[in-house]
Amino acid sequence: MLNSFAGINRNQMALSNKFAANLIFCALENEIAIDVAYRKKVSGSEITDGLPNYKIMKQIALRKRYSLIYPLMIKIAPWLIIFLFPIQWCVAIIGSVFFHQTSTESIRLLPTTLQNRELIRLAIAQEPQFSRLEQLIQPMSVFKLGRRLGLLFVLRSLFAHLIFIRAIFSKKNKQKRDMVLHARDSFLLLLIGYDISCGSDIVLTDDHYQRWSYILSHLAKDFRIVQHGFLDDGIHFPNKYGNVSKIYLRDKSFLKQFQRIYTLTESQLYSPKIEITKTPISKEALFLASSFPAIEHEIELIKIIRNNIRIPIIIKLHPAHTYDERKNQLLALADLSVEAEINPACLIFVSYNSFMEFDYLQNNMQTVSIARAGGVAQAYEEILKLLMHIDK
Image (cartoon, rainbow, N blue to C red; front, side):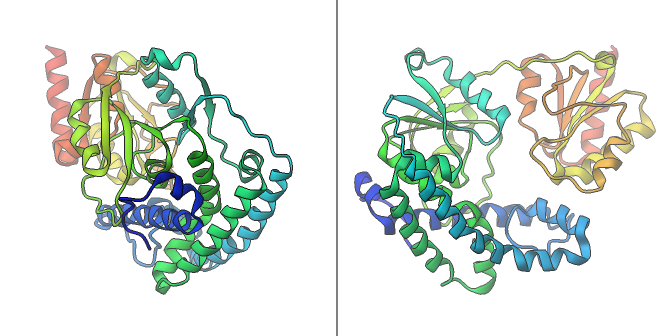
């Protein structure tokens, strides 16, 4: 498969089924690299033997939930994904019968979550030239994309998908399983690739380096990224990313990390303002923004705080994470739990390594990161020091 796209004309990319198949293949290889890096990080605190390199924390939660039948589920899942491919092809072909192409110049948004859709809009609000352009959410269904592209491009996507599937089956057994699991939306990715390569829209996403950004960086004529979190320098990507016209950064210290991944034209700082909600206990409370991969550290820290300090605890679960039964153990330690859309005011904001810390610092609140403190004991000491300083 192709490992580099240097020297290939972008218009030729859009017309070559083989290139499109290679592009998706390389995008998913890079996504597997993300899972491999994540697996190494959690292997010290979680048992990962026998799990596929696919959404590793979700697999840990699923194995704990379904225990005995989990191995059977993992064996069936790749075959179910392959079985669903022909159904997706048919749905796209049916959509193409109702072909309706839009030609209006627009800004196309590809958010990873509903919350991050607003983040993208906040970042580009400082660009006055965008005010005259319509903002469109990138269609994410094979039917809608079939309708946008028409029969010719749907058939091209189908042929490219067959080339892609053939490439998957050339892999070794474990690699094949990982790739098939990641390929669950590979036909959708191909349709999006053809859709993007045929247009002249400005395309924005909050995705840092997953499959969407890999594809967009090679196909979009004006591709932009809005930073929504931290980047991991420990990931070794097998395939080279493409071009980014502009990256909207929360802090200039992140610029070099993005430059390590992309060929970057321009960067710009932005500072979104979030709505902080007061609760009855906010003035005295410690707020923990939970992240499932760090749940053991979070439980340990909150237990230490409960045993040694009299301070109300507010906890919010990560809206995009799948939790196991430890969720109830964590929430039982809280005086108040809040929904995903609520950002509670607090005395001290605590997380393992959440990007929300930037939002709370911007609102003049004290923050502690378990990861940056060096562990649970060190984070507890930092909290004690902050409380002593506040009391003075």
